[in-house]
Length: 427
Image 1 (spheres, rainbow, N blue to C red):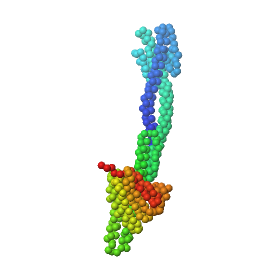
Image 2 (cartoon, rainbow, N blue to C red):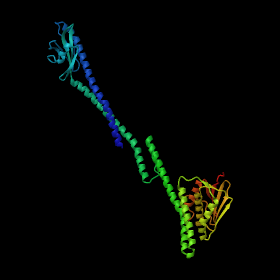
Image 3 (cartoon, one colour):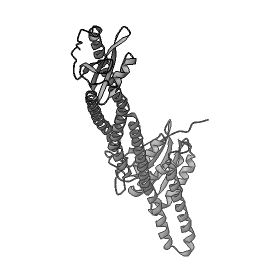
């Protein structure tokens, strides 16, 4: 690209100089020719004036004034013979043409010739011929053309230097953009481009940075969704597996009960997948009032069997709790995370209490397990209190905050987590 910019700039400069320089060069040649003719005409006129009195008096010998440079001045008689000065012995065509005009000019061999008549009254007494070699004109013209060519060369050289600097200034940010785009294609979504101070290039850089940021955010959401889905699906899959394994040990008459429980667990697994997909979408339906009793009953059906298999009890308590304003899928997943922690790390009965907390609805999840070190940031992604993956509580808090609620550890021992949600607006 740099070479192309330099080449095009230099070619444009050469064309511009040529289009301007060629007419100027022709004008210079014509100027020197016209100037030389004027010099010869002045020399001929001054010589004619100097000898006019001598030619009028036949007793006097005409004397031509001295000439400058390579000018040759000669005086010819009316019959065409050289009488004084320098020139050909006999009159040439230009001298003969002066007999019938006030001034004659033309080229004779390698000379530029001017001839003027010397008249006494109405009588032609002589002709003054002034000549100069064409080589002098060619020398002056060539010298000027060489000077012009030198200046043109300097101009082209300056254009080349400026074009190189301009090409470097234009190409460098584009090369950086190309390198950044290549890094983006290789999966580096943290790449950011520098600003060159050129509006058009900076617009491309802004677009590339925005694209990299959006792709990075999209990939991060996909990774988070994969981790969250893995975490949330692990418990229902485990429960389904346990129920199916237990069914293998049951008598044939009790298979229907085991299959019914397995179907219930499969339904729970399907609901979890639907919730995660709904929550992963950027555009979700607006939150609405939740039927809290129905949701808690669904929680009972989903988790009671798993706790019963461990010899534990699930208690659902409702204390005049109003309907919360939130996405049902989000609340279901938050409670699923809290109950999963209670099942995995807790002991004894698990109690879910829904109560009125003034301007909010509070849902407490409590078990009788060992205390939790409240100095740890339990809600940081990657932080785990046991054998977990440190994803569930971070996911639960992010879901709660997305619904304008809060999730916190209210009591370290016995462990009690509280979900606060805004109450539904009354019509």
